Image 1: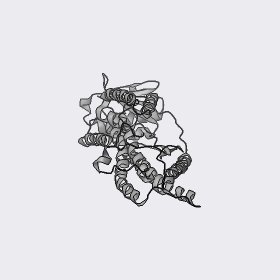
Image 2 (image 1 turned 90 degrees about the vertical axis):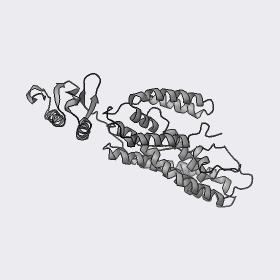
Image 3 (image 1 turned 120 degrees about the vertical axis):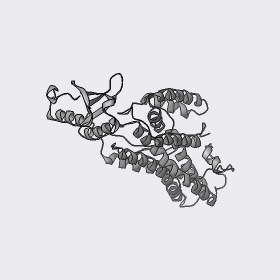
Amino acid sequence: MDLPQENIKVQSDDLAYVVDFVKSKINTYDIQAGPMNLRFYYFESDNPNIEQAFDEIRIELVDRGYIPFLSHDGEQFLDVTRRPNVKYRGTIVNVVMLVLTLASTIYVGSVYSAAFVPHSPNAEYIRLLYGFVFFSLPLMGILGIHELGHFIVAKRHHVKASLPFFIPFPIGLGTFGAFISLRDPIPNRRAMAEIGAAGPIFGFLTAIPLLFVAAYVQTLFHPVANAIIPFKIRYPLIYDLFRLVPTSSHPVFPMVFAVWVGMFATAMNLLPVGQLDGGHVLRGVMGRSATYVDYAFIALLFGLGFLYTGWWLLAIFVLIIGVAHPPALDDYSKLRQRDILIGVFALVMFVLTFTPIPLK
């Protein structure tokens, strides 16, 4: 039974529109207007298509500056609150960070290329060219397509997202990766799992053919005499699967290293903790039960830190940003078989790309 409109005290025509629109989508039995929210009570038995109705409400109201949220704790109700005003930086920041990351990856790639460029008057320029072609391009390509996957699937779910932010770091790997900013809340568990898995899937499928290209290109270039091997990398299971683990003790060719970094980034993102991509997938598939897995993996990271100290840094980072994943606006939507398969595929990707001791 709907509550008559005249019994609802609203503070503006805009809020009156919200009331009318929500009531046109769901059958309510009571509506309460508070200082910070409107609360619509309903019976699930009166709303067999509540998931679809909520998504229509969400798409309409988010663009109008409101956030709807479903709750099944005790009574079933839909809360509508004002969305805080947030100013985002223009795309110039994305462009500047992209250029800086290109520069840092080219430089780092040129350092790793030194072992394959004989001394000559033009050796420095050749190293920079190798750094661009054989390190920066494949690595930035994998990371960029990873973020493009998040962006495309977010748009598919009517969730606004920023362009990628690349993070330059002119030593080590040349970059700390990239990320996009979701500028709308995640609507439901299906969207959470699909948006979270999209990036690793896009990046992983991009990196697989590059594994073979890099392995072939490495056979065309030979290290110079007395070349220094600065570190030894451990290859994840996918290299054994395709029989691509090098057997020589020569320096790693920059493209091989770039693709390895792309695979390592896939594994890092798929760790099922916090708000990493794997955390999104886990929370989407398992719902509130995901919290137990989150804390188990934090404990695992601290344990792995005795083998490779980088895991301690990641564990501390996750603790700072938060281990528990926030819920979706509709945290009660049912999953489809496709989403379960996405979760299984994410697990397979993680197993194939993870290595406990990546560098030595």
